[in-house]
Length: 354
Image 1 (cartoon, rainbow, N blue to C red):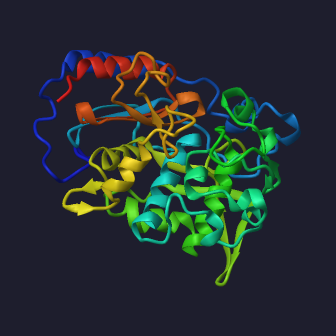
Image 2: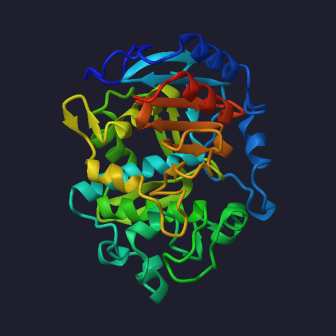
């Protein structure tokens, strides 16, 4: 495994680090596995509350146990398990989807507060409600769109009612809910906007420039395609409630986190604009601990024992975590580990800000 994720010097990675405390934190996380992930089909079936739509329609990958990597000032200072092993990212995929949207933003083909229907032609944005949905609404999960996509209706996502402030069908921007079907609509809209597959955009514009391996992949469902002028283009999913989503190693995910920590810059190249990274981490008006598909710990409602300076991508209840703390120049990438709140708290305590 490489000892760094960025060629640009970032200072001494061990300055202000309690090495013994860091090692204890890593050993603890390595010993807290999420159980049952070696049989992903059974594990996933138990996560879906609505049995009427439990059918998996995308590919699955069995889990390999706890793994992770900690990066300080662009250098790897700790790891556990096999951080090069590819794992399903679950809802952490949503934060990567928002980075792909940043490519469209930087290219000038998408404006956050512009209605989606002005740049893509899809029936979901043709009625009065749909015409009021902006790209911001899609990315901060406030579209309040109701319908079905790829055979999965919005109403079956239990997180919408468990975590949400939505009024289904209410005005876009006035209610928030964590809803995989709506995120899949975002992926469809972005695929039509780019006119090519999102994995192709992610590879050429983000992951290759930051030195990622080629082991990752991004999947959709059996029937998730967009009809474009060039033919049928696969549409990826933004989570893994029904299979699919991003499959990526902890090490490559740490590279993504470090890119965001550096304001979209890798070595001497601006891969994603700082303006877009700032937008990712700007609180949603109706959900202040959420940005553009990133969680914000400013008020300690995401992780109460963690620093307020952290931002994160998380999936499957946090067992898949990408924690980014600019104040500490710190990235934590953890896969299939239980009690990540303890991991974040212990690592943060071991690393002084600055």
